[in-house]
Length: 259
Length: 319
Image 1 (tube, helix red, strand yellow):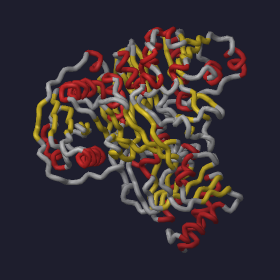
Image 2 (cartoon, helix red, strand yellow; image 1 turned 45 degrees about the vertical axis):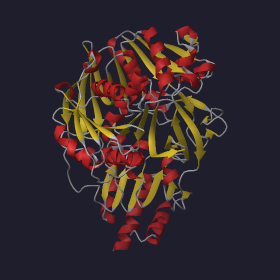
Image 3 (cartoon, chains in turn cyan, blue; image 1 turned 90 degrees about the horizontal axis):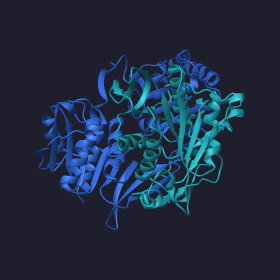
Image 4 (cartoon, one colour; image 1 turned 90 degrees about the vertical axis):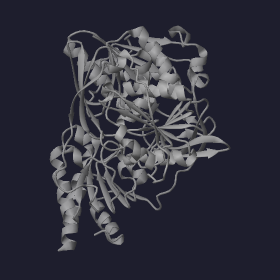
């Protein structure tokens, strides 16, 4: 069974996340790591391969060339190979452009299952899998809390506003898993040591047959025009618990007449 | 502007969020249309007219009965092209996000998501979106039409108005791959105990509780305060706590007087369900947890120590 896992490199969580006021894009100068939600997708891929007894787990990413370093975490967890699409002409790609580039890259792989995590932690986007599935003309199931693959089909349980749906689809299929689907493993020392030696293809847009006007700003259909501070919630306090945290909360509740 | 609003439904009613987006569209474009897609949905058309639809496009087909996205992409893409709509709006939901994403690819149409407001500036449609855990407000736009927008839950309230609501039948043509995924079963969980939507005080627990057993700490605090216990999607999906207690995008939207979040990181899906609470107190070990960005009082610490102490303090106060 061949499994492709689409991953993204994102700014590390924490106070440093910001937009660059000059480019109106996410500031990519700080520390970077794999989108944490993608770890669940990688874990799901590794378990599928283990259950099938053979196969390959390929990580597919579009991003700057140093994204390869972040992808090594996935290789360290056990993925077999990394494919990074990197090209200056791809910078600033929105959903239309990104889904087009990823679909072209995935077509080359011909995977039985294409996996995504539940969202990107930087953009909060949760729409890419559906766009990619449409371009690949494959069935898609998103928000998956549990799933099984057997006899060339996937059966998945997913949460919606109305409860849980069970959905069945033939392979090949695009699956987006929630962060409740599994507990991602940590890369072992041996995994980390071997990650660098695993195949890592770095491809340009031309290499995967993407016309320059289908990617980056040229291939995008949305813009960011301005940044401003959000509406304030008023006074906010944040304290470290030094043993008196409960007392401080109690004082606060009394002040606001909530007890 | 010629706007089409996708109206999700549960077979018998249209959620408030979708009607709110329709009312907003009608305020920007009095000729706004709505799309009802499903099986036996024609009877919902008057509801669409009541909240602002000048025209209601009804796509009825047994293949559309299951609430799955890809058949809806087929219907909407054809409708947008034939009718020349330049804007397609969705109230965010699990289904709507998948439909909007597929439609974006099918039509190569720009999609902006998580929009909290829509305005016309210099004759152009501009979306207002908060980003990075609502630490910044971003103005977003579209360079071509059709434009697609996904509106954040609870952004617009439905406003009654008398619109023509002319019902127009849509021819349905479905792609082969769109019916490959099939609905096998729906498990709709029934409500047990008091509804979290009615409680004035909610004590809510996330994965930071560490185990389902730790919910007992929250139950004791909620009992002392006279409130109810709520939860997050992560713990519900993990089977730690029942679905009817879930707050967030795919759960309930609550605005109690007091919301105490314990071990909750504050992911966007959770935030949209509780951000209008009057007072928010949060306890989390991770000083970078996004929930601290919208908490009136944030305590960085171990909830397993703080919550039982707080329960004792509340009990002592109440006698």
